[in-house]
Length: 365
Ligand code: PLP
Image 1: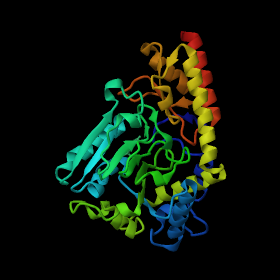
Image 2: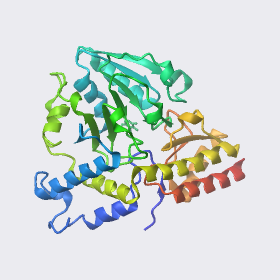
Image 3: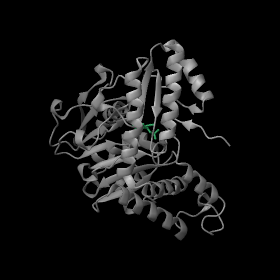
Image 4: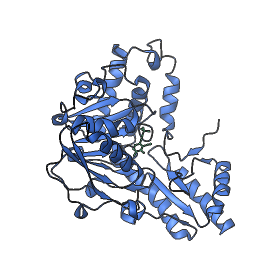
């Protein structure tokens, strides 16, 4: 068996020990005589899995007691609608647009605002600058009365990231799409009203989305909200109004345990800084590759880069694949390449990529 270094933006590589454990337990989980996929979600075995997963996530992210953790379905895209349905009714929400994903979230909220009797405002956008930076707090005129302020803290396609230190100051609850950098660094959950993340990048299999929501934001859903999309109903039912994505929750739980064994999020942040610095420093010094994101806004997780000549893209990708470095093609809206280096990507993978890029530049520069 040969495993490649997989730079996919998602579904993305998972830690190898997690996959091995899942494989070992596939037919018989802890003597239950069946695998997790085959268990009742209401049985004591699965209840112990979901309870442990939540406890480990709470510990990793130091989630305060007044926040609920929901294990939902529909991906992050469903949240683009679910958030306004739950939080917007008759109010107004502010949206920041710093890349393709926050733009999609804004568009969906804009579409729903009128039927929900609410309004959305675009309070800042970097689209005219090619989404090449985060927005600064001082360029935003936020409404202190807003029902919420939405932003994407890591733009997977454009490679733009903000940490807690770059958040807009607002009296309104911040709602953050953290799909592509959750668990890559410590986060002060108390700075947010709601955090959501699709699982398939830094958590586990696609199909699962995690929502961390402050208690006081529950119970505000519009009557138009389907029951299964009402955060309060889901919170009251332990995310099990209906059958939850059981296997995804189980694998997510294994990932949380793996993260704890690695030393938690501070240790992951150190590693992620090391990996990203290695790649950015090489790109910046190469004279052959370039990343066009403002230095202070660069993502540690998703690193888009362009070759000196686009005509070399296919040759670059073919050579990379032959060297065991896969999924490096950039998103079609941006072009070039993109290396996604989530928690599961070891430093060895980034070193192998840099070695390949150096060799390629020497041959074609
Ligand atoms: N938000 C971000 C930041 C993403 O990277 C993605 C996608 O991959 C999404 C939302 C959409 O996620 P999903 O495909 O789970 O709906």
